[in-house]
Length: 301
Image (cartoon, rainbow, N blue to C red; front, side, top):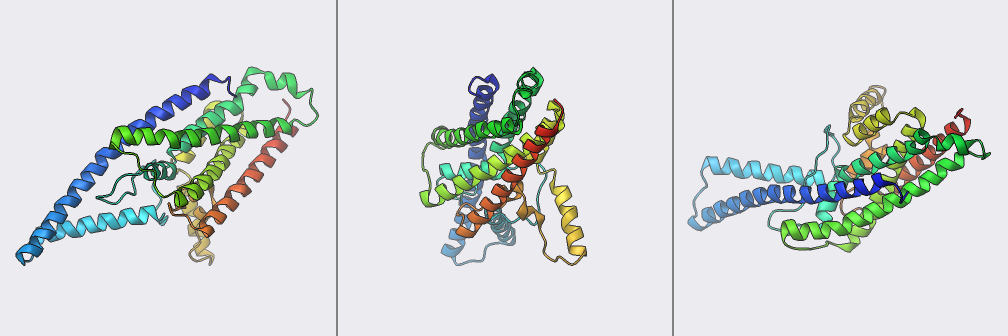
């Protein structure tokens, strides 16, 4: 794996993209902060003068409060409405410093890291098939499914290194973009980091399974990228609708998917959040490994 040039190219692009998103987040944060300071000044002036703020300003304040409420709901992972596409939005409250955890949380929640992970996963899973290496070695081993397990181990290492590296790099990006480095609450960072790592690894194995089953690099890559863009939310909405029609009220399949758990996991993840997310991730890891190994074992290569 470490001799694969595509891995280093993806890492370089990921670091550059993470730095770019940090500067873009800084622009959004400054705009929100400026508006918040303006509203604070209006409220302070109204209190000082003992007068009622005019209707226009009152409406502005209500709109700002509604916007802040929406951001809080986003940070709490309200999945009633799932948007198609990739959205990265800081959970930082106006007036407070942006922490490394804030940026990492927004990127992980928006599946920004998952996009780069699955691109490499598909390339790595299909590389041996395209090169003919599998045909040469496949007939020499009785359990060809173990070749899938070895890939899964390599991808686990790749996912762990990528996650750890991008978290450390984010501190440097914060220094450049926000002119400060505040890590955040480590009691929140550790469980969130480990849980998201497990979920992202499960997502990587899902995309690896797609690549192994389809055996087409372009189609597999397209499907994997679409998964990071919440394209499946259309299917999930249909399943939820059918479930509600047959009597399963308040049924939400999104809670039982890896991508759903990525988005639903709150920053201050509690014990129940961590356990339920880990269970979903572990279930998909076992299923994807078993399915990929079985198909690869039975397939004529």
